Image 1 (cartoon, rainbow, N blue to C red):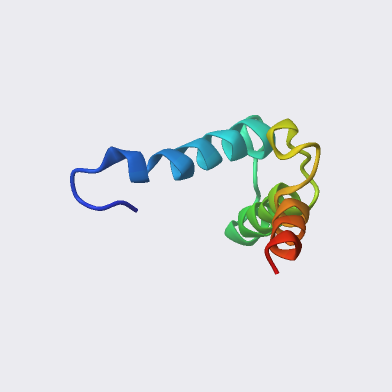
Image 2: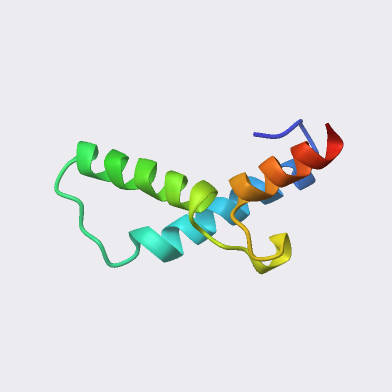
Length: 73
């Protein structure tokens, strides 16, 4: 995930996986790989489209990117 010897590149991914484990994985038993894969896909969609972040002025990451790109254009 990162260039060799540059641990700062891994930080965003480690943060995402830790949040994902806390919010959708711990305490849940998945019956099959397909169930786990579906849950991960649903969580990624939720994380990008529905999850409101205070740091992004109360918007989801997708909403924030759309707003920012409109300001630049």
